[in-house]
Length: 71
Image 1 (cartoon, rainbow, N blue to C red):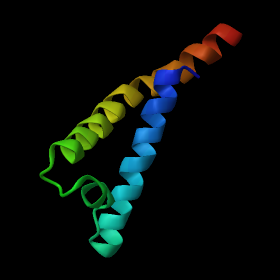
Image 2: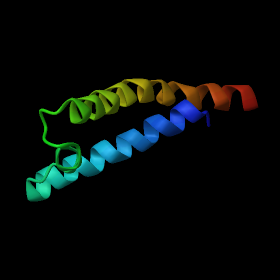
Image 3: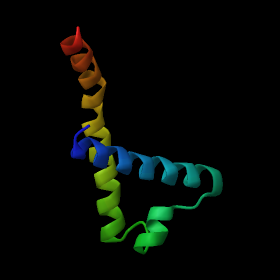
């Protein structure tokens, strides 16, 4: 697994946990850590999570490529 895949996975876990907290407790951890949801840092984190989700779409197809090369 490449380092960019691991970074994307980490950011998706952060985003997923954050959305879980928002859904269960109405608590936005990223906003709380970064000084509010309108702060530049929290918006950067949100964008990085979104980019990680887009990057992770390629992982669906990567698994198929690995299976084909092993056969």
